[in-house]
Image (cartoon, rainbow, N blue to C red; front, side, top):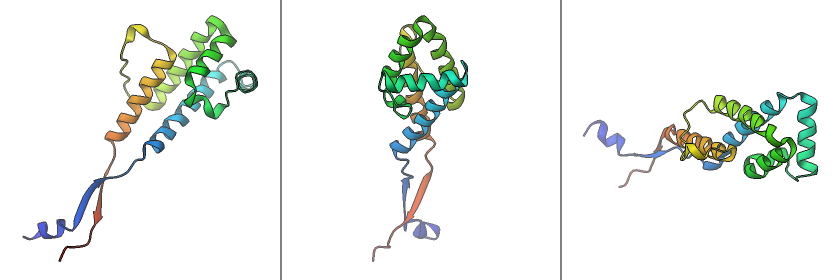
Length: 142
């Protein structure tokens, strides 16, 4: 049997990239994109916005990835029509960070929250496709 006898001692499985790890990676990229977008209006203004988000809207910085709709609504209340410019800046920074294509389900009904959801889906699918194969040695059956 040659090499096949040795191969039978191994079980092939995909390396377990826990979805939470990939989601944490995405969350961090999103927070960096938010930071960079808000920094475009100035460092002091960015800190004031985070303070306002936390005290008035009860959204902590680290909660933004899980409360993206609340974050978008708060930004719209703070900036009015100007929120669109800020959201576009954040989307541009996020796109640069994930380095991938984004598939929008309905490009006609394009919103900030739908874009973030689409980028997250694309990012997680890309990470899943990149999972390495792991070999585990198992006990030989007698």
